[in-house]
Image (cartoon, rainbow, N blue to C red; front, side, top):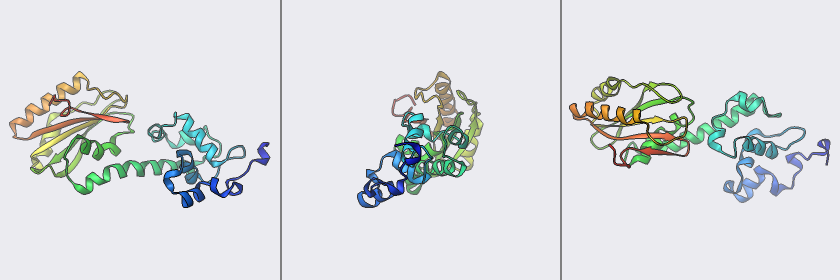
Length: 232
């Protein structure tokens, strides 16, 4: 079959069309490429929407986490058939997925373990190309008062002023806080600077009778918890 004879999705067997497959067999039967094909709607003269979607996934080693890091230009320039509108649809869908991951914790408004803290700030931190430092402020029952970014830095380091962590904790009358920052390198292990900063904040907070419950390092595929590792 040459390019001109390429079948459009509308001419595929009904069970092979992503939308029809979803309706007849359920959305969980669709591959990642088929889900993206639904978002973009059409391919190009050489590829169906599914084939184009699979090629996009191949470019990021089939990783949705890596796909979520791509910009509009990253999607439009190398892929014929992906214009700005389609690229925006893909990026928006992945952002909704990230926000959904943290929504349950926000609704429950309580931190009960390290995973809760990770899921709460995952959407804010996971795809950033630079480090950010956030704090979760909690009341005596570990219910969330608010979250706040206190610092933004480079690809491997962000400078944190302890006063910027403790001042809002006092203002919000927080009983405890959870520290959180990301590692764009995807290396979960804390650096020596991370350990020293945690110790410094903990010592300052102790003078104000504020507990540091944990320090979470957010990465694409998981996290590191100071509390779970027994070093806080």
